[in-house]
Image (cartoon, rainbow, N blue to C red):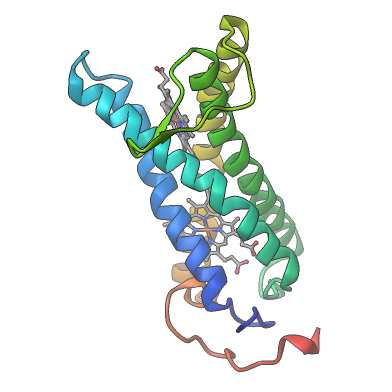
Length: 190
Ligand code: HEM
Ligand code: HEM
């Protein structure tokens, strides 16, 4: 299977990045909207869909992390050392948020006795008892990390867009679908 090289991301890395990005950005927008809706059947259907897609993130994350740890990361030598360090730190904080968001949502729902019904098929309960205090801690975590995640994404996006439009480097291009320059480099070089 094609691996990352010094200059490009593999198909698998891009697949994980963009599939999970679309789901997460939608979950953020839908999460913020659904909690502000008036009580209706539609609202609770949207809650159920939010929970199911959130659990998909929790399922994909270990696979993505395994792939990430099996691969070298394309270099960031084209940016200043502080920008490189910030980008790498933000990446790992994004991975942490990708774990804490679905985990806290899952615990909140199970502990408040609203166990998710995965796409209407079967219940998936988190390994916690029904307990108001647990639900409350998980709820506060879910809300707080949602805002932390949005702030991290602000940094992440401004870095990618600054590189692309101002510095005109290939950082965004090598994450976009399709072949990028340097794609045939051998990953064994580093
Ligand atoms: C990466 C995954 C997830 C993201 C990005 C996400 C995002 C959000 C956001 C932005 C909100 C609104 C917060 C607010 O009102 O300020 C929310 C609410 C909520 N989320 Fe998630 N969520 C995720 C996963 C999950 C999962 C896996 C579950 C449950 C299994 C879940 C259950 C809920 C529930 C029940 C609420 C409503 C809480 C309330 O009633 O105020 N979420 N989510
Ligand atoms: C439109 C939205 C997005 C754009 C334009 C974008 C862009 C990029 C780019 C260009 C890279 C490569 C950076 C490099 O070469 O070092 C990257 C990596 C990364 N992105 Fe995004 N991203 C977006 C959304 C997201 C979202 C929503 C998340 C997760 C919540 C995320 C998490 C990551 C992570 C963890 C990496 C590092 C991959 C690695 O381990 O090497 N991104 N992103």
